[in-house]
Amino acid sequence: MSGLIHWLEDHLLSCPYKAGLGIECPGCGFQRALVALLKGDFAESFALYPALLPMLMLFGVLALHIKYSFKHGAMALKILFVVNVVLIFGGWIAKML
Amino acid sequence: MHEETGQEPIDSHFQLPIPNATGVLVLGILSIPACCCLGGLGGIVMGIISLVMASKAQQLYTADPARYTVASFKNVSAGKICAIIGLSLSALTLVTTVVRVILGLASIMAIPELEKVMEEFLK
Image 1: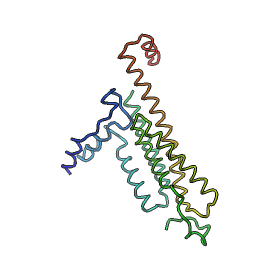
Image 2 (image 1 turned 135 degrees about the vertical axis):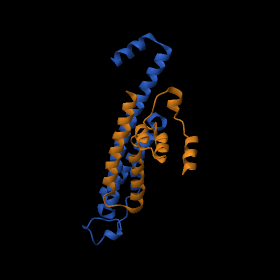
Image 3 (image 1 turned 90 degrees about the horizontal axis):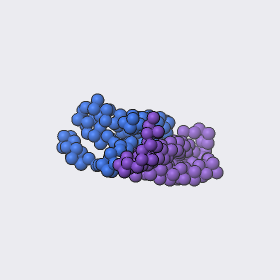
Image 4 (image 1 turned 180 degrees about the vertical axis):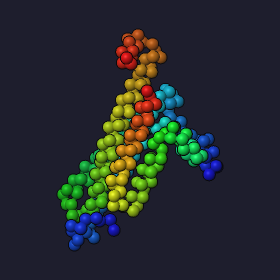
């Protein structure tokens, strides 16, 4: 696990907008938040990218629903999607202001 | 299996999922992470592809509903909603990014007219 964390920290993809122009895109902070989460620092992770856990849940439920076709999978995905959208864009706007 | 409807018990085990139903769902959901690519364009492209596939899927379904599983139709509907939301937000992201780039360039080049517009806008 610590090997994975070190690898991730060393291989963070850079965002061309942030590097070139200094502006943040809606995904900025995701990687660092993931590293913080893996280190167990939930507060830091949430501060960096509040939508991280909801997003991981969304992908997880999506993959499971594709495989097992849950009865309420489509509804669960719609709800998770909206939660994610609110957190991602709310967070992005808050960072801009 | 996948069917939830009890309405056509005779034909239900011959129902197939609508073609590309999963694709509509996946692309619709991925349109949000994709809006980080290319300043919003990635999300727009995925949203459009998802909606095009969704409209074909819906046409197939309405032409012969008994032939397809309800579960796959629910996936298409969910994917379509996600695609619409994702597409709209990606478009907004793109517009916002372009505006910020222009404002940034204007302050670098210190063009007086554009600076006045910036000040008006920020008031």
